[in-house]
Every structure is written in C-alpha cells, then in structure tokens.
Length: 309
Image (cartoon, rainbow, N blue to C red):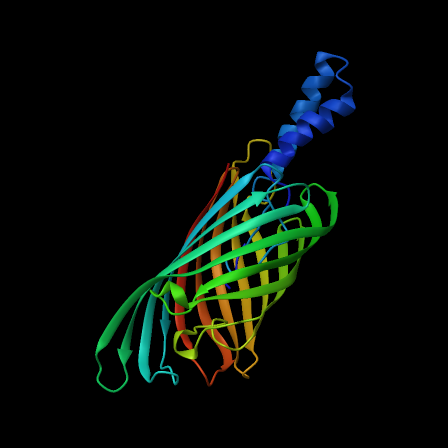
C-alpha cells in the first residue's frame, strides 16, 4: 500500500458562493448579490493552495461531492542488497496514478494503480535481470468524521481510512494476486502558513514474499506511520488575485513490519498548488532502520502532478 493522498476545494468555495453568501444576502438587490459574489471569489482565492497534501503522507482532505482529483506520480528508487534473494542492488522506476472521487459530503473514494519497471543485479554472478508489472491496485474509502474550520484557511480535520489492496505478488502472473485489507486514520491541521498531517495505517498482508518486498509488500503485516509538515513560503498572504502558492514540505515516513523490520525515511520537497492543478517534487532518504529480511532503501526521487475537474 503506497503512501499518499484537501481542505476546502475551489468547487466547495463555488458552492459557498451560490448557496452560502448569496443565499444569506437574500438576493435582495444587485448590490448585495455583487457583494456576496465578491466575498466568495475572495474566499476561493485565499484557499487556492489550501490542500497542502504532501507526497507520501495522507491528509484528511477530499474533493467535494461530484468533484474529481487526478494525481500522477513518478518515482526512481535505489535499494541495496536483499538477503531474501541474494541480490546486490535493485533499481526501480515506478508510476502511480490516483483518482480521488468526491461521493457525498465527508465521503470520498480513492482508486490507485501502481506500475513499475525494475532491474536487479545478482550478488554472485553480477548479471542484471529486468522485470515490469502492474504492481498493485488500491481501493480506499475516506470518511471525514471531524471538521473545525476556524475562519480563513485555518482548519482542523480527522478522517478514517479503509480499503483493500490487490497486490500482484508474482509480477507478470496475474494468478498470484493477493488481496490485503487496510485501515487507518489521519489528522490534518492548517494554521496560516503552516500545515501538518499525521497518519497511521495498518495493512493485513495475505501474500507476497520478501524478495519482492520493498516496504510493506511482504508476507508480514505492516504498520505505516507518516508525519508531514508543510510551510507556505510564497505568498506570505493570499490576495483576491492570488493564483497559487509555493510550499516547502518535510516528511518523516515510518514503517514497522511484524517480522521485526522497522525503518524511518526523511522526505524533503517543494510543492506548488494552484486553483486547478499542483506540482510536487520530493526526495526520500534513509533516516534510521533495522531491516533484516528485505532490501534497504539507498535513495529515492519523485515528482508528480494533480488536476482537479
């Protein structure tokens, strides 16, 4: 199960203009209507980059009902020796595509598909072998159980997560698909230029092997715990004509597997979020680990895009 992943979206703002500001104005005069629309536009402008979703950590945000967010990410991974198969090192290119669908208020569905191509150097012969596959499909439901909007862009939210991963455990052989359920929760808070996300997820693995396990994909169950800090460095304040914002992101990504393997990764990055699209770039580096049953991460690099429609 990969680590992914809005506060108020632009569409929610638009609905606020039509059903909130205008309705409260009573549509009595053209002046009041114009004022309501202007206030709604201002609110949307000040929340254009509100989502503050880091690359590897979940967020208690979601599209409004009837809205879709498409997210595509590309990763390059380098791993060291693997005691499970005797390989010396592995290099992976990974493509992850996610569609988030706003169902009804406080409910959303995420559909995620991951494909990869990799090559592995044999630790004895030095020969390289290559492979490619649809690695997994993840269906996840997000239910927001708490929301406290404090005014402006400040908000505090909690969501529960649940779903199932269809893991192509034997790569090209689709008969080797394992079905693994997962559950979790995520907490999100935004205060002015600062944002923070904390998630905790448990995955009950029903298949897999350590030779193809690069974190949470083996026969042992897995607990993911991820923290993300997001800081908006430009602009310092949103204005009605603001088109987007730039952020610095810092994540600590943790994984514990029930065979005793545990690791922490450090993920610094930069992100731009506009009204309808976003761009992100991130590195992932080993911070600390005690991994005895699978390959350890040497380094990773990722970039991605998000589109709202």
